[in-house]
Length: 138
Image (cartoon, rainbow, N blue to C red; front, side):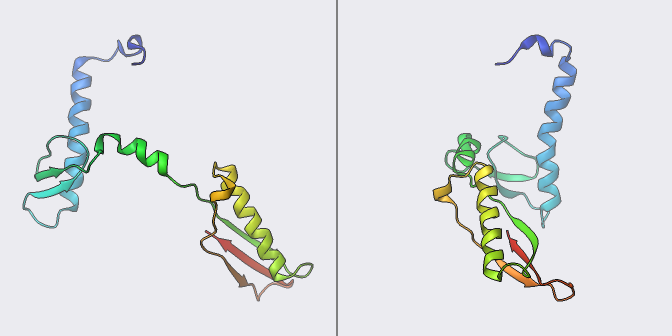
């Protein structure tokens, strides 16, 4: 896979060093998060063994986890704007923020029929000279 000519300048020593570093990075993370000096079980898809770990538990289909995660992932979007209510109602301002949110998610790749807004709020900005509302949709 790929073009082997592009890696001719990499020595075996560099490859061995990179492999060692790749192996030790998860070991360092495990060591940092352990709350006990005991060897503990770890849920991971790779590697085959880690220092300080009693057993590596592999979830079913771990070898295709990234592909499955990508296939079922969801697209999200948010809008946080300040709108004046001097020339529109609060409902119209919220409808505008809602439409912007839906369009942002569709532009990011979602299918319109699968989009749903899970949270929406309007906060009155009492210190403004104009009648404004802050709409936030995460």
